Image (cartoon, rainbow, N blue to C red; front, side):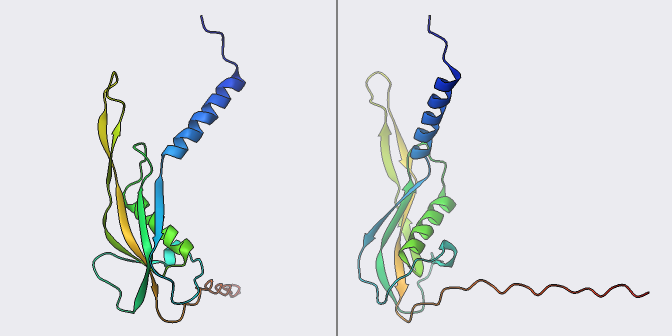
Length: 158
């Protein structure tokens, strides 16, 4: 018979399992540099990184490098929006002005050892793109929008 497990041991096991689960979920991004930037770069918010999927930017640009984003493991629930969002975030950290999506970068993996437990193939969803920097002067960081003036409501007429 197994000895009873203390609440402290159960908590430790639960926290360990949660940590392992988080490490196996989500999106992994990788960057490979291609060319030097035409001017100094500064990190920017992901939302300010332009994403191009069917046409190229009209302004001259330099291809800074390649960004690949993919599900971290077979347990990841991240799909296209989350993966591209992670790629955009990585591009922003690097100071890229834009991200040109180039295609799918799915990766097939075999799970299990095949001996007694069997095995199956799993495809990790992924995409790759080019991190670009426009050749002109660096864009000024978007300032916070000015606060709206307080609305002054006149007192009701007597």
